[in-house]
Length: 87
Image 1 (cartoon, rainbow, N blue to C red):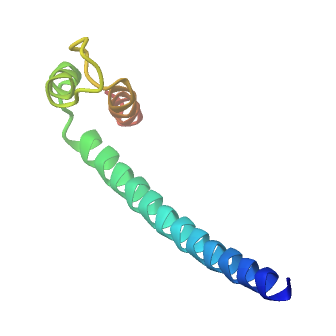
Image 2 (cartoon, rainbow, N blue to C red):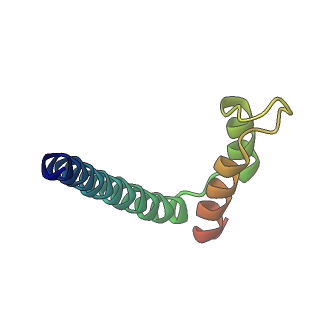
């Protein structure tokens, strides 16, 4: 019984360590995305782009559904960045 409990405890420790590692990786990815969004927003303020061209490219390149409208999440994020840049 004690051996089984120690085995379970070891497995839970391994799971915990893996979870902590994944959280750190996710935080790192989020930090990179936020930094890129900030840089892009500043760049777009200096050099605006046509929002319809951006939407058209997203519709062309993201295929979340068969409706031909592109991935709604990608569209929402792009529109948010454009709005933050004043476009």
